[in-house]
Image (spheres, protein in one colour):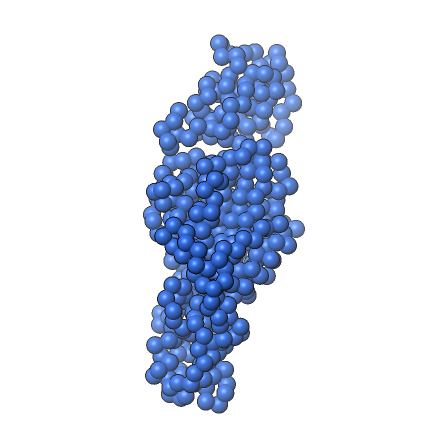
Length: 435
Ligand code: ZN
């Protein structure tokens, strides 16, 4: 099955689940992801201190509704889980509209959509409904039921690591905390699950770690618990909002010109000239934590629309109708090409550095595959030989020569086989002033 279609199917499967930053909706989502990849589930107890934060109590909900005086459920969590403000404390009461009104949330500008509201760190309760319905509510006595639980439990996140030849890691993070919203972020969860399944079939050079966790508190918890792994992070991407029709958007890391920044911007340019790159800001998703100054990691973000950047954002209209198979396919292509380019971005040492070696005599310009011409291959070899002084990686040589990293990669494999180059490990990190 095409990967985009498989991704869409997983989106359809997890879309109805009521997720939040903690609770059974997250566990159920990870269990569905676990049918595709062996994701390891971690539980961190409520009350655990993590940097300046504390893991919140766990929230679960069974049912919630508002019924009118005839007993008819006019707002029903079972019809759409966005109807309840996430983290609503339990309530069981009868009240007039006037008392209920401050707990009702709607979008006057989008009168048919239900907003998504949360109150994670302040005890409160609320219902969300279309503005049209809110306006039409008669003065009546309403029965208000939220059958939820907010008590000590755990925060749940999932992790899947694919070991490569190197212990250096590429981290991919996506947020799992949003309820029935498709682009934000059933799309990110499903895309990373699909991609991880494909990558596990290959033999990557780098190791890959996929993290499925709630936004903010999830990345904070992950960073606090993975002190050892952090020093091995070669690059990372926060991935989300990858299924809508908007053009791809890359948000640079705080450092701005790291390997992943340069490669991601180049890949997006190749895939879609209308794609864009934006500078780092301390607002958005979990790149804020990875790029906090105490970590300052080479972690960028890939989305299509950005947070807050499309009308359906955080509303019931962010539904399956917003998903585009072509967009998912393009997002999959972008992420997998970024990973492949970083994976292949290594440096070499020329073992025959005094004048050019004779390539033809070594049979290096014979059987060329993959549509690469003899001229391109020869150029790639000459560029590699000239620049392989240990200070330039494949990505640098691609930028200088205009040749594709894939051509340079296969040329390098040939030169290593002919004992003209020796692999020296990952490309230097110029953003730290090295090389
Ligand atoms: Zn969001």
